[in-house]
Image 1 (spheres, rainbow, N blue to C red):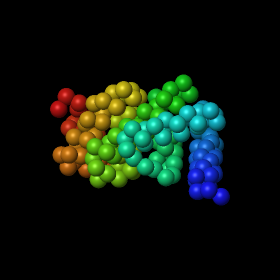
Image 2: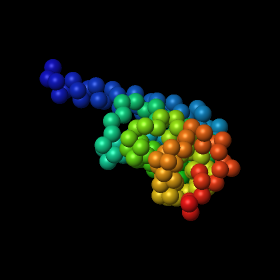
Image 3: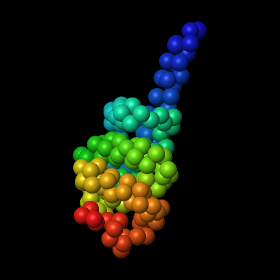
Image 4: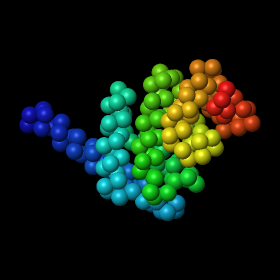
Length: 164
């Protein structure tokens, strides 16, 4: 069997596995009155691939996108109508921050920071998160402010104030 044909078959199997892993999240999503259809999952994977290409990144599993889906599903700002677009935008934001911080921040710390800003500072505005929120997260990192402690630091205005 030619190499290209083998590679294509492996790619098809990986895609099916990724689709199933995302569809498996529906059992937890229903608790929040949300659902991912097979069409939604395909759109997420296409957007994921585009974001990875645009950011010059490689990701072999779906761990990050699954974690984003789980965390967003718990947000009071998420509805079925904005769920898909928020997933895609937050995923792209995540990888933008990874690039801006040269991978020095763990995935968990970035996800925590992004979700705190999304919920508590941007009040569900992905546009604000992708603009000033990202700037502030990267600035905090560059100023050596620990993102792991971000949730504990709500009182510290420098974490939250976009004007500073």
